[in-house]
Length: 320
Image (tube, rainbow, N blue to C red):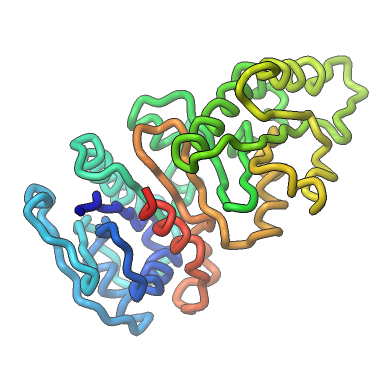
């Protein structure tokens, strides 16, 4: 039985991602893995990190004719000139990153693969202010407006209704329809990919779900969104106070906790599981995952970065 390849975009060239990629090379997966990155950069970092493995450079036009093996790095070469193995993150990497995503997008649209992993991207240097994150960037490539960012762990996952939005804008961005759409995406994903209906908890926006403001988002927006699912084939409840939902006796009742903003749910999840989580974009016509870590400039070249999140990402896609 043949399995579709997993495409991996290395992402920001000055990040710990290639180090992490090297560390999972001893693991054998049933799906072939194709790395989209710079050959020159790969050689530089392999030398710096004292990693040795053969590299097989692939011709994009002949991909269907190749047989992919585990004993080499299958590489689609994207040209990027870099004299040192690690430099400071800057905008000069933008063209290289953009070209990498362009190649992956074309291959997915052609049906060559339906599985994508991307390494970390610096939102500050690569994305403009209209794009909040890679979730939105990739969704735009496929003209998808209804998406969700699920930070997944088999014990507990979280989803922020708003993603990389300054706190002062959160209350203006949330609405009943948005919350309903995110819940539908999560429920459908769990039923399709994981084969069960998830128990979903929805958090309030304000401390203790209370406010002294004239407009109460918890009563006017969040509660009506939750009530929409009453009597339907969903398991949704809330709104709950964010300060107690992650206590062990409370979080154990749910598969997914939905928050109104990024740090409301990502901070406690990363405290609980650290690198044992992956970022899945819901709503796309394929599976896209990114390991749940950033470029981490401070760790460049030290060979101390944890590869667990990338391992989890590939393992998850290998099951599908």
